[in-house]
Length: 315
Image (cartoon, rainbow, N blue to C red):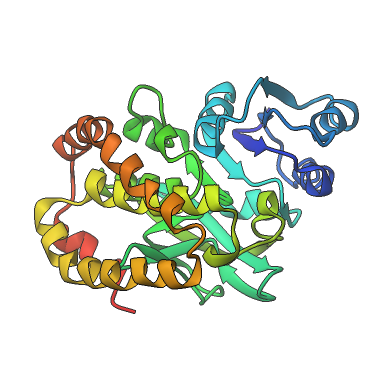
């Protein structure tokens, strides 16, 4: 029995799930278990999993509870000391997990590797840094070991004890995010508690990208409901994780971004603009939820705002 659990959340992933799981079960290291949480798929993908991969622990939800909450179910149901969180539209090379395990040292909370992005046809890392406007910058140097801010939720191998350390009420990913940005939030919390994240070269994966939204990678092209979550979650991430001193350091960029963002949305998406403004309502409504978790995580903080600033880039 291996020491790695694999955790996937599926929602209408029929075009990809069979290839994804075939790659998982072809890994050169043995696995503890593979857990798939299905969020009420209607495309036959859960039936495909049941028929083609009976060894999978399949958890079937009656409704779509989102990636974050579904991933929490999948992680909790696994038994490995390490957990690979994987999107159904990601296909691993055979030695991926084996090589990623080599990247762990005592305080490493997560490891990721190089990813070929089908949409952009380039190799990047699953690891990222942050822009001060709270957007990610993928690491582009995929040939060397590098410390990064966090790992994409599409492809991240976590130490379970690190996830347990930052979990609030057994929530590794914050379910208030539903989807998009929950990996940034988790990465920030891991950093606050002194857990590092590493890009490990040597193996890779192939990522279709935004498989659940038919490959629409750009924010402007995504469905309105996903755009609303993306906008909301950006506010939640800052309010939840930034210390006062780090927030003040980020504030000029955040204000400038807001002054550009909303006029841009009004011009580009005038028919959606009233609906997208509800992201602000969502964020304000969740302030009590966020404040409880903010107090909890910041009380345990192990690093200074100066330490975190090195992961935030201007461009």
